[in-house]
View: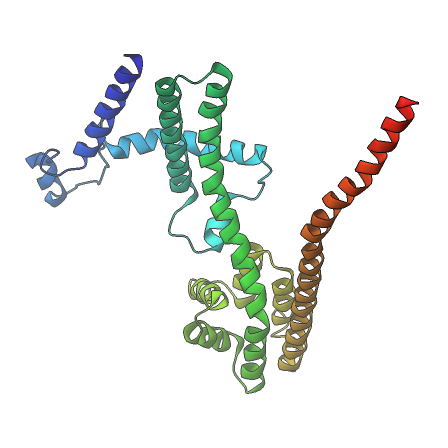
Length: 300
């Protein structure tokens, strides 16, 4: 009965929030609809007490604080906003944290109902009720971490090609701003998406060096830091195309070394199941004579 009462209250609150977003049941007053057309009107956001907007305004700061603390407890120190901007996510950090806490709360309610309904032992029920929300929270967090790492890896793989294109364009007489704009428009990879942001920041008033430095601070890729440090010499040297081409070859060699290292690690990992498969029969063959010898000595 207690579980049924809790479910009924939660269902009522959810239904109220859902109906508050429907226009036919939450129709604004005539004075509110005519107010924007009156002289001297100042736009003031009015949020009803029982609505999704008011619920979000209350929950958003708490979700942000709780989410960041839980993430730090499990060893995730990088800010969520930086990771979301890195992968060009349409969500901001607050919206993602609210969604994350919402999934964890739903998992907590489902786990509680399952523990009460199935009559689980106390210790196991506590582990389920506490473990399932944390698992759902970390699952969403891991998706962002994995997407961020994959974006950085893909960016480092695309950098040699992009650097070579920059070197050829600047050697042909293009300016740095024009070369960045051309690669951003013609490309379709991660570098092109990031360069579109760089070009947009330049159009907003930043210099090329400042916009590129923002890109390096956001991407956190060592090869990109070296490339941007060379591009910062745009106004100080006339042979920038050759320097960029040399850096592109250096990045390509670095990626090749990382690929060889990954291949060697996977080659070594192949021997792990082979070793385990031969170790168990070997121990059995050694253990049988050993046990027989112990039995013989104990009998004498």
